[in-house]
Image 1 (cartoon, rainbow, N blue to C red):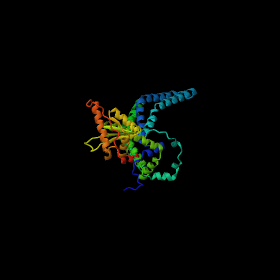
Image 2: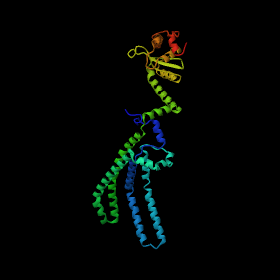
Image 3: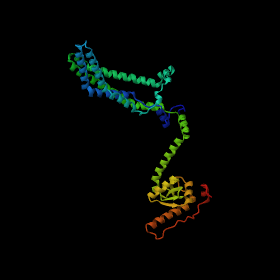
Image 4: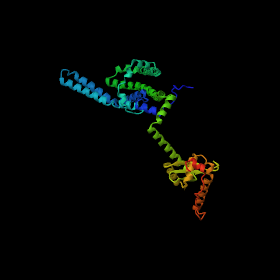
Length: 377
């Protein structure tokens, strides 16, 4: 058996919420890198003709400037032209950081945490640094980095080796042809590099979530302490009551339509009873409640034409002595049998089988021990 200090329990919603408030979320560096490289690749492919035009403009400006080195005006024009070329080039790169930002938020979502903006001097501590260096997570990261570097270098070596003949052939081409061919070779090598990074990202996203969940795991004692602290939290207690109420309302909406009769107080108590000889030897409760829940039971019953009988002492007696799905006590058999008989006679009268409307005998004796059980004398 694990000791109480083993972090064998899943993190509670409370711990995950606190971690999120501190900005501690699962993040994938490989996904961010893959998004940046993919954005770079598609940007390069989309703007390649435009980049070629910018390069030609720059070379044309250099050629024009070569014969006017002594002209200050020409020098200023040359500088402005190059600045304009650089600005136009930078403008095409805007999608790349945007894609990186979006990708970094995918695993854990977005949250603004002011505490992350404050300097953390604990991270500058040499002791903390040494502890991080010899931690299991550090060894895992180093192992992942070495493995990725080895795979990437192997793929790049293979791609460059296959493209070596084409690279050497560039010096025999005219400038425009060499630029176009060079971009084609670069795009070919870069596409394989991106493919490897994307595979890393697809593996790293679930791994990051797994490692984060593992880091957030709690001991049994921590779970007990958190639930103990939450028991005194009014907001949490209110939320629990609200959820319990919603669950009760949903269950009532499903079970009350199956009832044979609803006995009420008339407003404060309501119990829905059913008699099914194949399931139980005696009538049993399918739903019960007080105040708002009692009103809800009556509304559901009215919507499904369930007979409602006002019998305050009997309603309270059944409510306090019987649980949901439990048979009524033997002391109440006679009273409940009388009510069920009345309901059957009332149904027969409404169908026209009986001329005289039946009347409920409300003088039925409720045993004193049952009345005492719910505080009545």
